[in-house]
Image 1 (cartoon, rainbow, N blue to C red):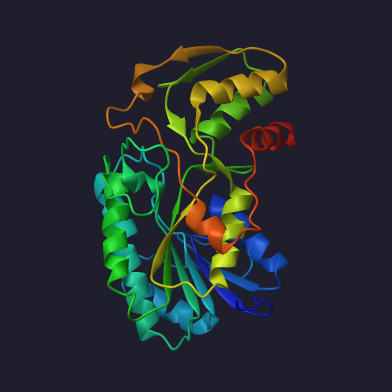
Image 2: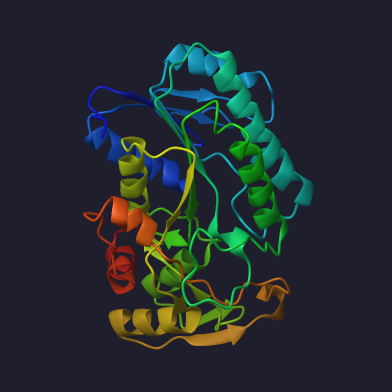
Length: 300
């Protein structure tokens, strides 16, 4: 295991939900954190960089001289309206990043590429392991599967780990994602909410668990491997509402809006985290009720 103290890490997409939490977590480990953002940012030690531009990352990497790179920059909202953008950013952008690393002067100890459990699609297994063949059912998932194929071509050239995070949430996640949307309604004590299919089951982790796993993977000897990052349990939206009703002390009226029901919806996802926890048995899964409680009672 590698010591993180005084090491430099570059996070692409640092201004997003995961990037902000990851920055704080890595700094607590004694690391110096730099980042890229699509537009200019007031965040310290960040650089504006467009990963769809083949040359934009080389200068940043040479300026930072990172020991580690964590690639988060992506179109991550499944309902994003521009199908082509998924492929420009998630596939071509990742190819550009890897080419930039090879062209740079950096001596990289580890690269983490964030993929997604969405690539598994609809599955009949109780727990999805890394060996399950991908069956993506939407453009977001297809772009991530294509990205993984591109990344695997670099395994012999660079020390890469691909992560497949399942759903995760926490304080600061945008409200167009479902859990923050539902929590926000309860925080504002609204009486009604419009949702789509309530019988969609997802494996929800805390963003704190995700960034802790990423930090540990940076220092591991693993390379050329794929890791699920998940809780190992799944909950439906209906169950999430019921948990929040208990925590908030009142019931909310749910209206099903057909516009929110996607034809390509993956019905049930629960991940097998055995590979990750076998490597890091000290990783602690946060229970969903505790995640919701923290989000609900955090001051606006």
